[in-house]
Amino acid sequence: RKEVEQDPGPFNVPEGATVAFNCTYSNSASQSFFWYRQDCRKEPKLLMSVYSSGNEDGRFTAQLNRASQYISLLIRDSKLSDSATYLCVAMEYGNKLVFGAGTILRVKS
Amino acid sequence: DAGITQSPRYKITETGRQVTLMCHQTWSHSYMFWYRQDLGHGLRLIYYSAAADITDKGEVPDGYVVSRSKTENFPLTLESATRSQTSVYFCASSVPRGNEQFFGPGTRLTVL
Image (cartoon, rainbow over all chains, first blue to last red; front, top):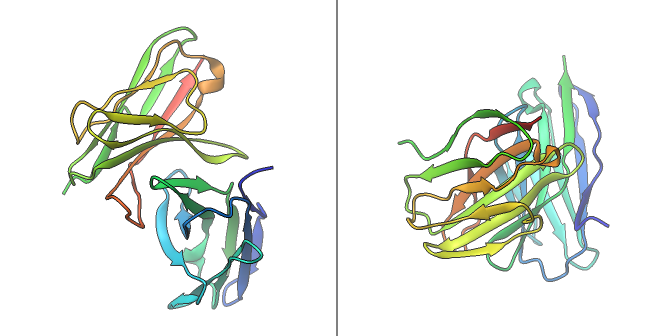
C-alpha cells in the first residue's frame, strides 16, 4: 500500500466548475501536509500547505482531517490555467516528503 | 538569481556505464534531496542531505551514490546504470523545518 494515495483521474471539467481532489495517507506520524502543482514536463511547485483548521488561498481551499488521515483540495471557478497534475504530499521527520502519484486535472473551455 | 539548477537536462547512456547528475543551489539551503519520478509512482526519494558531509538514504537508494562536500552541490551518481533507472530525476532544496522544497528543472535520463 502506498503511503500517500490519490485518485489519478484525469478529471475533465469545464471552465467555471468546482472540482475536489481527495488524498489519504497511512503514516500517522507525518508532520505536515501540502499540495504541490506540477505542469507537464516541469518541476513540482508548492501550491499550498494544509492545516486541520482548513486554509484558503483565493479559489483554492485545503483541508486536513488527522483522525481519518484524509486531505482534500477544492478548486472553485476553474480556469484553463489550472490544468496540471496536483500532488498530495506528506512531510516526515527530517524534512522528507512523501508524494502521492498525482491527480490530473484538465479544464476545458 | 539562479536558484537551483540541474545538469545535464537530458542524458542518454548505456547499461553498465557510470553517470553523474549534478545539482547546484545558490540559496545556501542546508537540506538537499534527490527524487526520481516514474509514471504511476509519483516522486520517490532516493537520497537526502541535511548538511555538507551528512547524507542518508531515502525510499529507493539502491544503485545510487551521493556526496555533499559543499553546501551548494549535491551530485547523484549511478555507478552502473540499468534500464530500470530510466526516469526523470529532480533535485530539491529547503531550509531546516521549512515547509517548502524548491525543485530544480529535472534531468531526463534514458538508459539503453
